[in-house]
Structures are given as structure tokens and as C-alpha cells.
Length: 388
Image (tube, rainbow, N blue to C red; front, side):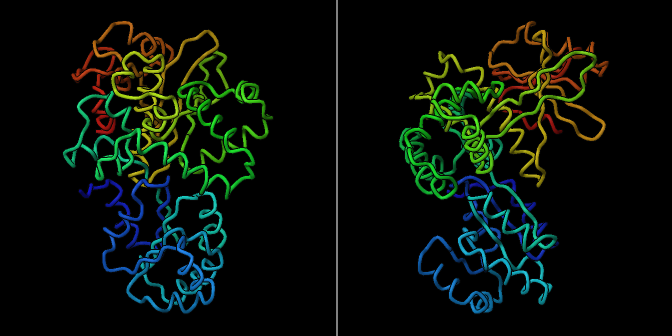
């Protein structure tokens, strides 16, 4: 079953404004499928295939000349010289939306693009499925525990692959195909252990020293490996909010994964029932909300800037979004029954900041939306209502 992706509108819009559109994101997030759906008449070439790659390497000019009606190039970073030729073709023809580039190795692809195609390419990012996309396709999980466990990779839904079957293979292919091509990881078991430790830090302040000590690698390696995970759309960071209101703030970012199903697999969670009693249930729910917010922005063609606020006495709010001069202050609680304690962080920050109540939101594990005097209450499956 084909799933309607929210990024479609932005892709088609930018294809009318730029000669080249690049779609990057994690492996198996649906980039190729989406490109083919948006441009069904374009020729498709996958440069991961040795024979196609050899053909392009042998004569890039002839390759580009062969497809006048439009071309989708998958994993384009495998033939870096193609970008220089593409620049010449784009400048000569001045046609818009003729070339669509997709790739999982974002760090390599963007490096080549910025060198050769600056000003000629629109860069978009496709993440795993959001809850909104699943709802539109009639496949919304019945509970947040189900979504946490399954995550959003399309194959789990359109091919009906169970998460315990999907994620071990996904992790293995990521280790073998991507990590080894980026950094010199001689001991993949150490990197695999590193992934598990990072999963256990979901929703926590980043402490590279702690991670370094736990698996006996130096901090430089930890930071290098975290950078690889971030650039390949496995993890992302929320930064400390910069306004201090005369209080000393923490300076470390908080770590999140783009997909909670991957986190559950790395943590050894076997089913949705396990989540309800797992010690990381709250962190997983918080991660879910952060990733849904990130997907909303990426699907609008915007790279999100997500913050949290915490001072040195332990007062905090989970998420702050800035949109121009306006702020959205968000507290996240996995509990399914509203509790007055859920609002303590929001109340503290409201008094400190002087912002109006309509800037404050509580997202919780229940099912009811409410408007209260101290803020707006949203259920777990209505994260996008933040932006109405």
C-alpha cells in the first residue's frame, strides 16, 4: 500500500523553482518511492548498482544527455564527478526540476552538492513516517505504545514486517554499508555496543565522558561517532535555550533519535506491553513528541531548531520552539490521566518569562484536548495541533 507523504507538496513546489531537487534522509525512509511517485515519467538510475555506476563513471556527459525528459539519480554520491557535469548541464539548459537526487549518506551527498550545485539545488529531508501520515493512510497505531514500538519506517507498515524482524537487519545493514564507508571502524561490535549505550541516553543530557568511560574509547571517537549518527539521520539534538532569565543554565544538549522503534530495538524491548513497565517509557514518549515536531518542520522544508530549558536548580521545560517573536513552551508527560503536577514546569516558566497562557502546551499520553487557564492540553496523537 502506498502511503501519502507530507513532503510531496514541498518537493513539487521546489521542482518548479530549482533545476535540481535533492532528497536525503535515513535509509529506507521512502526517498526513492517518493521521488518516483512525484516524477513518474522520469528515468530512474541507482548508482549503487555496479553496472550503472560503471556506465556513469565511464561517460557522465553521455549519461546525462540520454535522458531529456527528467532523471532521478539514487545514491548520487557514489559518482562524485557527476556533480560537476550536472552543474554544466543545469546552467546550459536552465530547465527547472529536471534532476532529482536521492541519497542516504547525507554527509557525502551534501558535501558534493555544496561544492558543485550551490544555488542550483533545493535540499529536502525525508524522515520515517509521522503519526499524521499513518492516520491519513488509515494505519494509525491504536496507542502511543504501539507507535513507540513500531516507529515509522515504511516497510513495517506497507510490507507488514514486524519490528523484531525489521530493526536487527536495518541496524546490521547500517553498520556494514554506511558506517564502514564513512569511518574506520575496525571493531563493529564496539560500534554496535556504542549504539546501544546511546539509545539508553535518549532524552538525557549528552555526556561524552560518561559514554567514553562505559565502552573504553576516547572522547574524540565518541564525538566522531555521534556526528556520524547525527548526519545520517539516526539521532538529533535539542539545544539549551539561550535566554537565562538571570539563572544559570545547563549547557549540554539533549539527545534524541528520529525513530523510537529503532531505540526500542536497541534497548531490547520485545513488544508494546514491555513499554508500559519499562524504566525509559517517559524518555521514549518524550522522544516521540520531539521526533514528530521535527518531522512536521522537515516536511515543510524547514530544518527545525528545537530547544529545552533547564536551570541549575532542576527547574525545566521539555521543549521550546521559537517562531519569529513567538514561542511555544511544551511539557511532555507519558501519563494517560491528567495530573496537576504535570503543569509545574510550565507554571514556573510562565512566571519567569511573563508569557501568556496560550504559549504553553502540555502533551500527554491521554486522549483529550483541553484549553486551561494555564495552557493548552494535547493528546499524544495530536502533536501537529501545536501548529494550528
